[in-house]
Image (cartoon, rainbow, N blue to C red; front, top):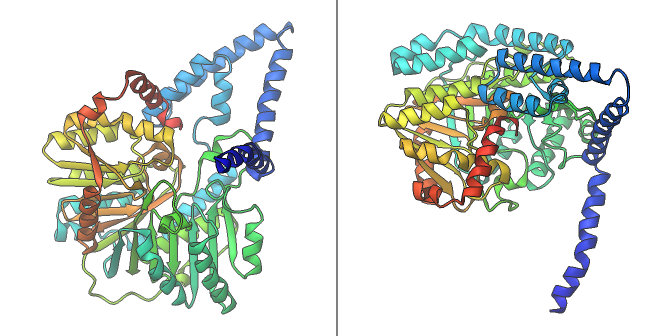
Length: 526
């Protein structure tokens, strides 16, 4: 009892300590500055209410709201995203138009557009000559393989490669030793790009090798996302790495301005050694991803290792982002290693997605896999916040007799997004889709496996942000031995998962179903 009283007495101090720490954290300062902007807008508007020009301004802003709605309707954005913004603009007239001007759309500055054009041109120059293998792939594996491969070649200059060994890791825990061993083998360069980096067992082990390799003359470069790592790394962290001889760049620094540009994040995961070995998947550089720290129960994640010719495509993806985040004129061809020895089974096609090129590569890869499935499509995803086209594709596949199974978390990391995820269950279940929740904890894997022949492992979540707002990457697999490993892992994970039924959906209280329906309307904006 005394222990309980003592703990209760210290609770307010504990909360106050956390609040104080947050206030003086960079995110707290930024939040205060953004709130100040919003208050300033409100004060200016209130001061105009007694002015003779108030009615004119109000009418003008109302007209701008109508114009904003027309603009949204004509935009190329996802229909669900449009609906959410149209509701906001019309409900909050005349301020809705200002909200859209500040936060809506997916705009890039002219300087950014120029850099993006340079990035795309360099990718085409380096990877374009390797494209054109889709037809040959089709002769070996059939029309479905050719169509999927051709799309990635034409949309984003992502070639198909043979001579590439693949290894699938069903947990972050089991790839830890292989990551360290691969880094130890580096002779020329190490490129690292992650959404989240946090000091701990995983990153500190990696960093120790990076520092030693940089001292030996290895070219070591690190990119991390500012928002992704805002609570895990100090703003000065790049200087710490530079002192170790490690080049570092931060993607899209958070600035105290109300702007949607803060929504465009670098969600890619790349670890590349000498252009010969690469790792990607859902794993970030933080301890929960290898279950060295518990968050949301057992953390189920996955990764894939490539060794061989296919790594060049991932190397180019990293270098293009490196050059986009800062001016540096690398001679890109100098990073390309000698061709790998023949003998690897199957084919790989690493791909990348950019939110500013009006080409939803990540979503289209998923749609292609669903449409091409003849027998089954097994999906693991942390979030199931899908638009009408993906929902319809899953339902149609199930109605056509395809065995469609999806595993989502049972313990969520974001409760609001989890409610949206569950809001999609009922209609999918009615169509015959089988849904499971990973009972031991949180599943962060983003994997598709289809008919024992095709699979993808990468960073693309099944939500609007991943498919339309983030930089993402993944690897398409065609008849590689690792496809069987991905399938086996899915079935083993399913055994540890709870199957969701229509009865479960019907048992949800009415108020919660209404809440989920409202959340679905604004899901693309979450």
